[in-house]
Image (cartoon, rainbow, N blue to C red; front, side, top):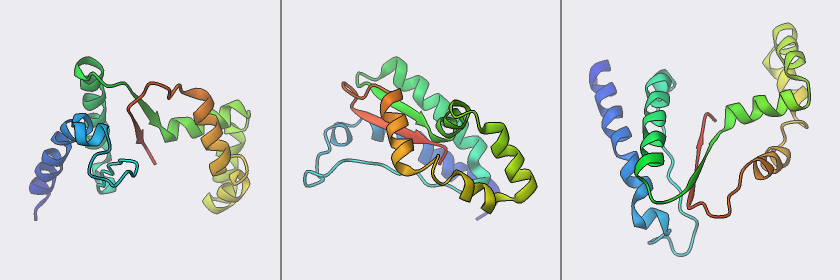
Length: 138
């Protein structure tokens, strides 16, 4: 498959996201045996720019035309905000530059633990009347 066809295939998949997110089966978690509904959209790293552009289009469309409220969480932005809140963002950049990714990962293990990130997100957003959550930038 050539590059142009790969991009077209990705665009076709991206075009279907809005319909999936607004379909009653997704919103009401139907056909899932009572489990929580979720949808994962995977793509190759080289498609990041196109996917980010489409996410903006999809969320704008959801804001204008969707009757269901949702929360959009940009996980990368959350992590940056957490580091700024702790006043260690610049230190993190410096550590990564001087000691590498593994040293940075080890240094931030506690600060960016799953529990702390989840608590930060829970405190930042109001989930009470939301039907779904979009999480981007893993």
